[in-house]
Image (tube, rainbow, N blue to C red; front, side):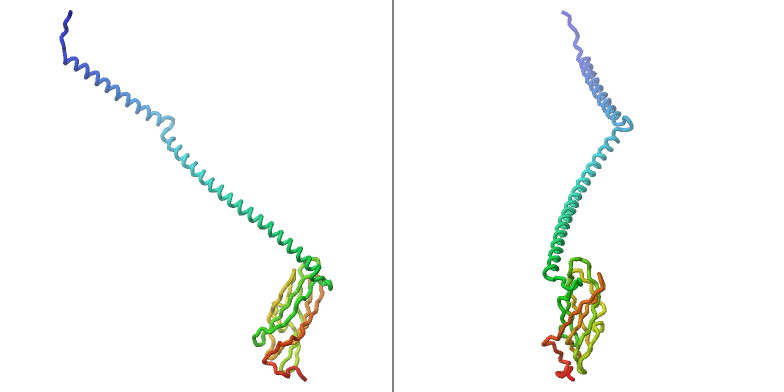
Length: 242
């Protein structure tokens, strides 16, 4: 049996050396790993910049997707509005067709064109407006016949009135404003205009002539007789006598 000398100092030195070697190996491994990561980040002009650019592209793509969704929603609203307008337009066209059919029936049955002139004076009245020397002409012109062409022309005639010095005749153009003398009747024209008479005159008769210029020249006449109860306080009781 061989006895060896126990050397504690040598054993401690071996243990410490081993620990230092392990620490050195760990440090070298960490440095190598860090170098590898940095090398990967700088390969081909810089992978780090590529990653940042990729993040920017992802964000831009997300923004474009959101804008596309908004555009699609707006397009849906526009299509809905367009469809509603189209439906309302069709309904309006159907309504117009119904009204034209009813008007044609009215022309054939209710207002037959007996005269063949395409126009009819349905109503003719002269009424007091309640103001001194202010009278109102009420006239309803109806288009007759089968065609839809407008009837155009001009109102003429004579207004007969009583005054302090007897009965006088006034041309319609003298008492009716110039802008109300012309007419254009497509279906019906309800004309209401003020008549301006000299002081002291009361209308008793209106001989109206509707002079048609288109579609063909013609004329229609109608008279308004004096109505009971139409009086003026400015006219004496014996006005028009003698």
